Length: 143
Image 1 (spheres, rainbow, N blue to C red):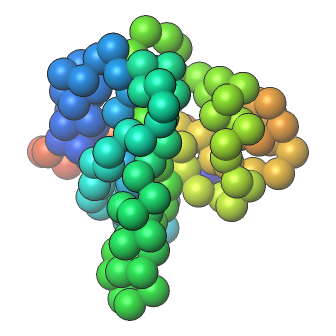
Image 2: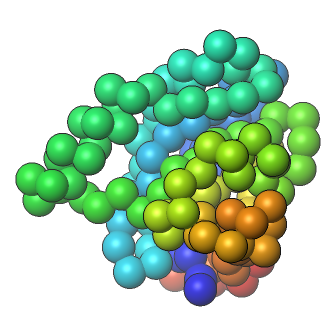
């Protein structure tokens, strides 16, 4: 599987991660057919946002309702690991439902995408995804 995302969106997410460090940022990714078309930042309501993230349930519920009403489909989630790698953690795996949604992990510089599935290669929950970062001039670069 490949995930297509614009360099503009990635730049926005990385900038937000840098500005918010050492706390983790999080939010929702919207799109379809393996393409991220937009995103929405969400409040990190984790008890310790410097070590964990939890998307504000109200933001998630609102996005799910909007999607059911014909709004943009949720293709996944993003969050940051401010002082770590862009690989999923054991905690990420424990939190993730095997629903096939994307988990985009950023650290202010690097990015990686993962698909949450049953029996995934990483911690039994995630499979890696190739990123296709589309620049604003239409060129692509596979990561």
